[in-house]
Length: 449
Image (tube, rainbow, N blue to C red):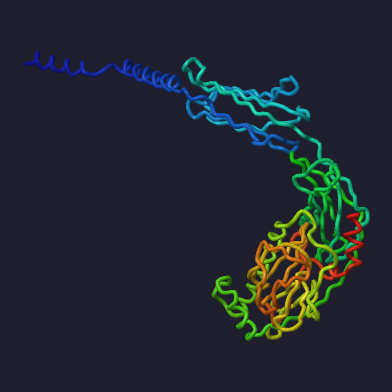
């Protein structure tokens, strides 16, 4: 009995493995798994070289991205090849597991001209003995570090606060962007097709009504295709102007008549005054942003000729840049600036096109009601608002004096009249100037000769 029991116990003990042997087996399995993964990784690293353009400049951001999610990266080398010379921009090895690197590349040692960027990356795989883990990539660039040179052609530039002028300048090369910067406002310039071999640009720009003469500092700017930029000032003289101050009295009856026209655009909450103020502020901002958007749909050449025509037999009811206090029950509730001319004639009077151009908008536009916008080229556009009817469509070409609409009281209009505006790059400017043949000759057409 005891003998059998003892024999049985020995059999039970024989079923287990010694601890040392068990740990050795686990270690071998781990090594085998690691080796399997290393041999199994047959996908080489993935390389991306940026930027994805041929022409680069001093400000261009060059970088490489190398990824290997399998066995990880072992080494990365980046070399620039230029005029037969090889310049190492990056050389790194990795002891641990690095799956991805992203590195900026310095252009300091490179010269202008064609160059090639070569990237070699190795991952940590062993199959088949490193060959499957090797990647190479190459990209060719042209490095341009010279900014465009600016040559001023218009040496006399006289402006009025709220008005505009024309600057003509030439560049040493074609620009990706050029124009005049006034504070944060940008007035694009347009390359002319008849530059006689020069890169000649025309730029209509404004002295905005809300910029003091002491703060008005226009600057020509140009950026070439490689991102190199240049700036320069120029000679000018500007005249300060004082604009009128006016009061607009709001009544419940006026707001009850006006607000329904904005159904779907105004939150249906708050008092009549709350809704009116939303229109006069938020929708006004949206509408003025649209004028800037329309200005981008412009011809690069002048479409107009001679003085603009105005609404016949019309009296001025409000002027450009009138400062307006809005009063309700004796209290000031808002302030806005009137950026156009209000012209009153007969009810539903025929509205002529101010000058030749192309229709870029003909529809309802918030505070302006029914609107027509005509593009006259170089970012110059005329606006006709509060219309009762519209006789043209987007894309139509119109002649000076052609019937385009009839006056009305749509939008935020207190009665039948025409709100007439002139914008340059979407910025409202003084319309009077464009009715004046002498002003046009002295400030625009004489420079074209």
